[in-house]
Every structure is written in structure tokens, then in C-alpha cells.
Length: 128
Picture 1 (cartoon, rainbow, N blue to C red):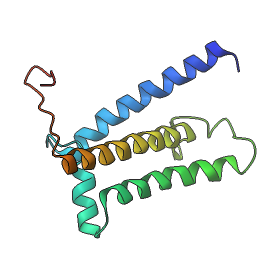
Picture 2 (picture 1 turned 30 degrees about the horizontal axis):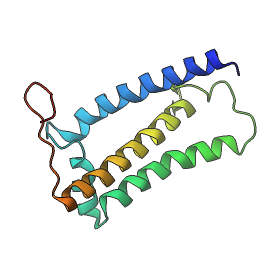
Picture 3 (picture 1 turned 90 degrees about the vertical axis):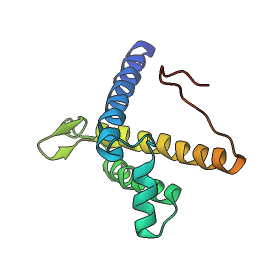
């Protein structure tokens, strides 16, 4: 693959991933300022650590990717964001990458809490 084509692919994935994070954040946070609240509450209900819960959700998508690539040769109708059968392989890859970012956020959040470090976001969006 040529570098320019790779850059286009990366840009396409990043745009989809950011859109997914925004859309799903609204669904999962229900207006809470903590964008990780869903992981914290759901994991508590299940008696799990939030990081382990997030990693489990990541594995669901990664498992779909593994199943697709082990078949050797991705069919064009699978290399889509979504289709008649539901989420395509691109969607599973994007979701997996997003869950890794959310896992990083959960780890950072835990580190910040353990160290007593707090970041205040002003009304104008600036970090104080």
C-alpha cells in the first residue's frame, strides 16, 4: 500500500472512531461529567474491576477481528463499517481501538485518584 493511501485509511478510521466516541459517550454517560461512569457502574454491578470490564468488551471486538482474519481473505462485503448483517470488520477494528483508549483512560483515572491529582476544567474548556 502506498503511503498516501495509508494516510487516507488512517484518517478515515480516526474520523469514524471519534464520531463513535462522541455518539456512544452520550448514550453511556447520560449527561454525567465522568465519561467513564458506564464502566464504573456496570463493572460494580458485575463485581468486576472497571479496567477488566473494559478489557472484556475490547476482547469481544478483537475476537470478531480474529475470526475474520483466520479465514484468509476478507470478503468485500465484510470490509465495511456496517452492512445488512450488522457491524462490519472496519467497525469492529474501530471499536477495539476505542476500547483500548477507554482502557487507557480508566488506568489514567485510577493513577490520578491514587496520587490525589485532580484536573479542573474551566467553563471555557481550558484546563486549570
